[in-house]
Image (cartoon, rainbow, N blue to C red; front, side, top):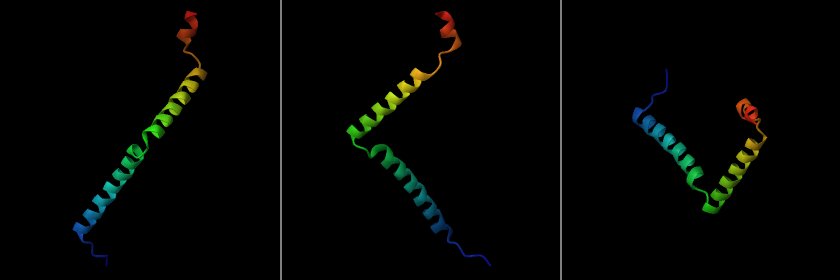
Amino acid sequence: MGEIVNLRRARKARDRAGKETAAAANRARFGEAPATRDLRQARERQQAERLAAHLRKARDEVEER
């Protein structure tokens, strides 16, 4: 026979696990210092600019020249 499960406890445990997942995401999102966040954003922007500089231009842009 299967194990007897208290549905109220199972529901509360499931809800707690969901809230913990959301809390972990919020800690990662809001938990860094402003200086660290600004530095990370500047580095990401710099990487995006470097990548864009190495991309081939669209055929229309090349033909206009």
